[in-house]
Length: 299
Picture 1: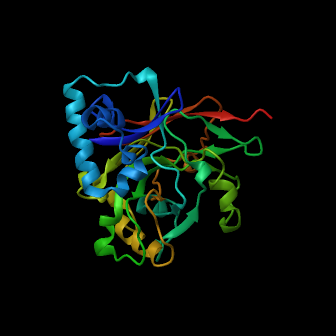
Picture 2: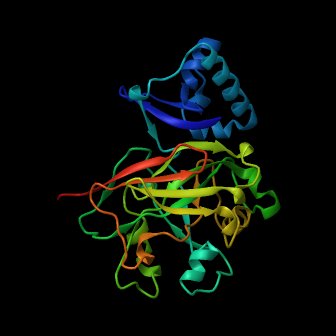
Picture 3: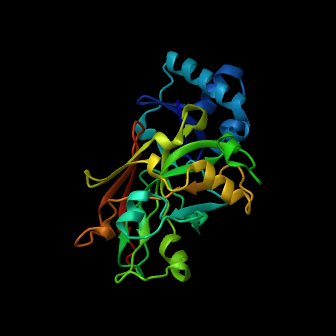
């Protein structure tokens, strides 16, 4: 079972389960089963806060709803981002293949940067590029969604603080020639509105025995551009959580996007940047792809 935030044309938002190619509105299923709504099915963060009890309830309701034929018509709803994170952090050069390609040493500590809550949009939401930016690149990544308050967490315990995993496109503005030090301009490059699409689903952490054994893919207009394994990370998910929470408290719904690997457009010869109308898909293998179309602001 995977999970998602969905919205109807009426503006009502609920948590849904995604099983195979079928989507079930869990709040609607709860009303049928219990006669009243449950706040934990209002959004994914509320469900993550409910812990194992919430996930068990979601699985039971999903099975009952599927048996009763309570399957949503894909034209009746849209996928929202799994969360709008209060803290949205990313990692630079966290894959060995890309770091080696760039001729750089592996980071002794995770190289952190911040995205903004406004970066987070969902499946089929356009990536809207400000007219002040002329070059952008895709960066397929594994997103880690925090499930419970995490502060001063040790790596050996870190994965128990994860609520789930989702696909993230760390859309990034690019500069040619590339600056030797990007620290002073990283916000402008990484944190524009819509530059952090994620989803469409979240895999509960309990269904991912090892986040370092996932395959991440990216396609542009149907052509595969990236395919890499998370076992190539310089710093594992658990190590990154330990490093961050030694300094920053993470809350349910916060997101860490864990870096990208080879295949990004800027390292190709010549570089390949996204253009108006391009459709980018980012996917955790075995999950539905996150799909977003590129649009430049006209004014």
